[in-house]
Length: 240
Image (cartoon, rainbow, N blue to C red; front, side, top):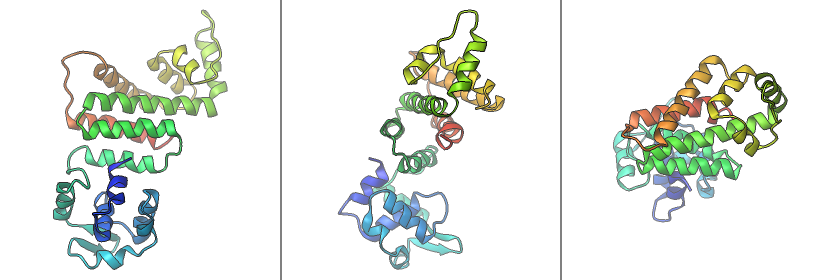
């Protein structure tokens, strides 16, 4: 369960504060319909069936602008101090993006990868976050190939490995065993699933994952991890 879902489920948090929390965790102002939609997606039925403005207009922490409701920075700090949301930082927009993605995920395997990655980021387990977000991304790419590009992928395999022979792949395990992930990305470029630039950017993410996944003296800063996850959200998670 994500932090937003946990906070909205708490009985010791007022209805007004829950609406403030939804707005505070969003990037930019929110219309009432959007606030109710987030409430619904995260299991807060009472909030989904009420009018957010009736509560937000009663507090000085909320501000109404032409594009919707927003909250003061002091309000965000107060909510974070109470443990209802993460403190502002480099990774906060990234974890929020992952959580928004998670609300639309109905595949338990996809949800598991994303939930574990979010927990790693919150706990500052940056190496684990890099590895898990990559594992989730490659899983999504595997699934997309199997559902939409399997014929083209196997044809590319026969063309590329005709000397040593190519055994057609049929499931995730086949794909994982057939070629290294770097070769897999290159094959995706050749069958038109990735552009050359996208393949290069994902290869950089894979290189970072390999560095994070092996014993070495490399340390990772928040901004590096944030860039890694943001790249995967843009190139894979939001598309597949």
